[in-house]
Amino acid sequence: MYHSTSSPREELSGPRRGPSETGSPTGTRNPMADWQMRTKRPLRGPVREEAGPTPKNYITPAGLQRLRDEHRFLLSRERPAVVEVVAWAASNGDRSENADYLYGKRRLGQIDSRIRFLTKRIDAAVAVDPAAPRPGSAATRVFFGATVTYKDAAGLEHVVSIVGIDEVDLDRGYISWRSPLANALMKASPGDRVNLRAPAKTEHLEIIEVEYAPIPMDPFREPLGAQSTPKVERS
Image (tube, rainbow, N blue to C red):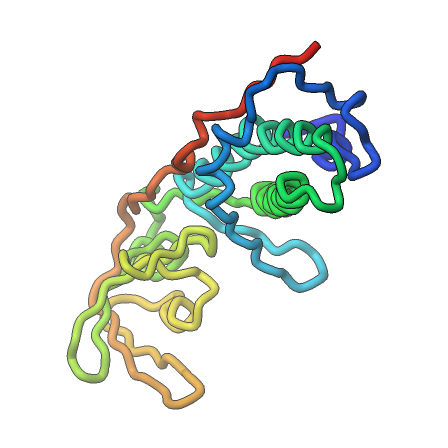
């Protein structure tokens, strides 16, 4: 968790703040040169959640670490770099026709939105280790973190792992614990038959195996160009 005495928006309040408050670049180097690769990389938009009490965010320890690493990167690397570029662009004249300034401000809004989203997800996180031993019958029943082998009506076998909503990867068979398939599988044991209800039809599934084992997660990786944080000499 990361705490600050000021919100991200307090660091740069808006177009009315001048270079005298953020520092004026005196060098001739254009900081946008090191920032070009970053400007081409849009942030993922946060998922909109319904109003009301924040639900628990079940997640694996590796998935939670990935959120924390991205949160740290945005606060300590990405946002300061964009703030610096915006300050540099603001010193170059009319802001209303300054593409660098306008893009930087829009980018800053995206970053702040992502930071708020990650903060909520981390605050609501409940980490559950998929490999932790389960007592008694829970070891063979489907809950969060289970890797399930099931057979569909056509006799084809499928393997899915039930993970957090921030960890979904359909190519690897990682499904959200809030998905219709996970809901159908929940609390079932090998040999049980469950119904997967969909708008078009209802599928009948048979549970073959339930296993609790480590679920590999890719770590957060800093985007290409992140190491080129612009640095401007100041007076």
